[in-house]
Image (cartoon, rainbow, N blue to C red; front, side):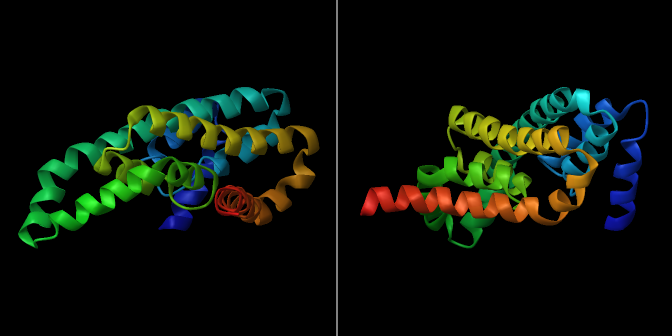
Length: 192
């Protein structure tokens, strides 16, 4: 099923509505859809490198708006579904402790999920569930998703089709290593 969804998403890149399709995929990927917008961005930018920045901008705007939907899903469903379940099992006090810890580090969670292969939708919903400050959530989302989409666009704009295999194989790992190094650097500065 995922392969069929992937192939369908790729086919959208060739349609005359590709930019609209990218906006829709970017929006729903941030809250429910399993295929990332990168899958659509790569063939679109290779086909029309002069539009790389427009394509990245559409993906960024739609992804951040979709992240807000995910945030509000978490926010709205927690009170109606999540809290009653926690109360039934006597775990509501544990959640309050988790909420406090998450909100202390939530901006980092959004940054990590927004740049790495970790499902961004999980963090958007969790951020709403814990009530992470919406401004912090939005800023971290813009920075993380912007970095991811504009780095991808820049690489494809500069190097074109020859870098496609490298991106598809290694870019997620490079983002993970970058985020680990960034967090590790802040940790070292704080504790050493």
